[in-house]
Length: 288
Ligand SMILES: [Zn+2]
Figure 1: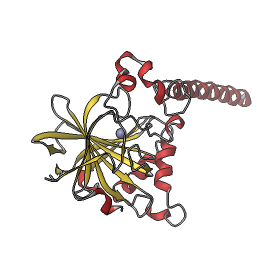
Figure 2: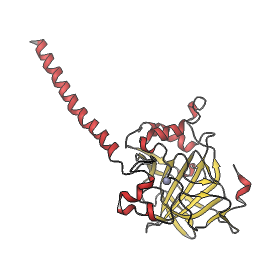
Figure 3: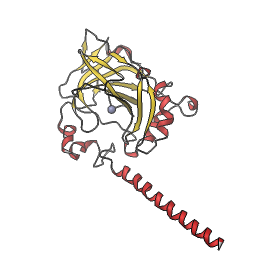
């Protein structure tokens, strides 16, 4: 009798376990399938087709002010009167999110974490995220990683500051997030980070490129003011394991996002007579 009861109990546990496991695996499947676009060459959802996937994404195909671009010395116009990027940030609550196609840190509230000022207009910091390898190139050279800090005005004007990285010494900002990033590998999850200070992201110096472009992911919205720092930051890796795996930060970012976005850099877009301004001294004098 006792044996029978144990048997029934075991069966119940097994059935319950199956019931609970079913939706879980189902969800994982859905997450994988629900991707709207990817970065795989030749894929029907790859960068070449983004503009065909949805009507609202048409700019990805027909827009003439698309990003990223190559910033070649031959195309750059020097700006004599230089204006430093006026960053006015403060620490505030933030969340780290695995969006499937990238990892993003998003601050709460529209104007709580501060702003930058460009041509007298204030753009409020909303979020930052990483691409690897870099999306923008300088004289055809692609770097290991690119960080985008996305700012908006109340009427949805967008200004993005880009920082380029190559493998080197640790970056405190990314190092702090690595445990959270790795805990979300292959899953669309988010984690509350508490207070995050955007000033820990390096300011990047006084030399930068500026041009008018677009978001580099669908809907590829145009009219985005781009500022790409000239200074290449020696990048991030997890301090404790730096001796073994000096590029572990990149691995963490790449492994955390879904496989279709492991290399989440959009291909270069045509310049189409746009001007690229260089603020600072000659772009030639400061390669790293
Ligand atoms: Zn981006």
